[in-house]
Picture 1 (cartoon, rainbow, N blue to C red):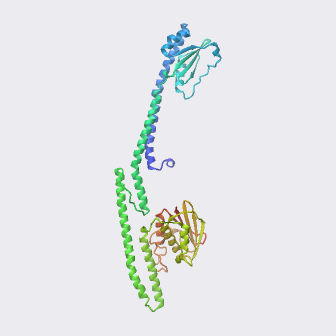
Picture 2: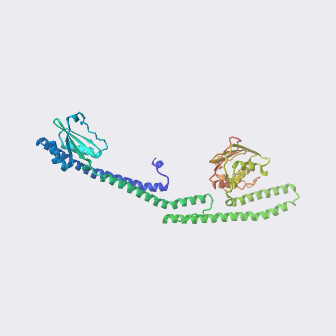
Picture 3: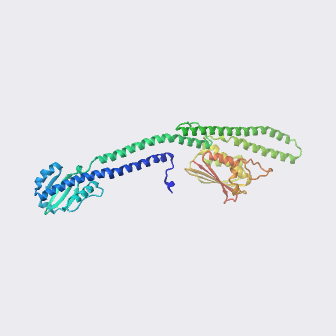
Length: 435
């Protein structure tokens, strides 16, 4: 449950690892400060002032010192102003302590005053002073105490320095962490681009020693994979090209065979072999067809349908909505042609539905063929895989059609899904391409 609320970004996680201990540390400091230092200082200063007030009241009660004399003798040295309220002011209710719950200074002062004075008394905090009202017999004495005698402003300065210094340290840590994590992000982006089959040309090795080591190993791996793919493609292209010449000679020699049945059978086999070789050669060239030309998918589908290769075929296209979107021309055309060829090898009717939006292009292809078993749908995307394992096949099938299509779509973040067709009873192929 906790993992759902944790940040996913490495930078935010690293910053959190730094910020959380710092916040906890600051909370401990503030708690200790208020409990052990600030609270004690306020309590002792409040006790001192409360004792001075108690002493003054004691002198007034027992030695019959007048209020004016007490104000001169004691108030001048304690910075307190002692005043006897007139009879007119007695109508004011001084019997209520007007203390706010977060006024820690007034609360601490009242606590000490309660322990020192036996006479009835009330306090009223102000911005800079605390007013103390004491009832002696029928008189009410008002004592004004400066608030600075009970508390100190240094506490707020201390808290301000803690908050400001913590914010500065967190900001500096964020900048340094971002610079340290930036090479990791660049490495991830380079790996993503390479995984799509794109060239990684602007990647530079940087960062800490561990990150640099990972980047160096990534480049080594990239170069090894690139060499292996190039060698495999060159070998496949070379074999296919070399086989073209003997197949051409075989086709010429087949033309002189007098037995029409044998002649047509041999020519048909040669044609199938040529088609398979063309697929092999196209498969070896897939990495070189990814240009940046963009087309509208609706227009591209209509153009493919009108191509001479699909004229006379039972191919229907239904357009749900036609937004103005553009996708990679070469990849889209190759993918659709591959899927149409694959469907017409096993079916004689195809129904295509196209949906376009601002974010997604979706092409759904239904056919009335025999479909693909659920257990084989993951395997048909493997290169050279054939559901029919027999050697004698009456159509060309190299096992590269769906594999090539998925490879092409993956290079532009597209997806392909195989399902049972509820419309024609055969195979349903769904292609989704982000715009």
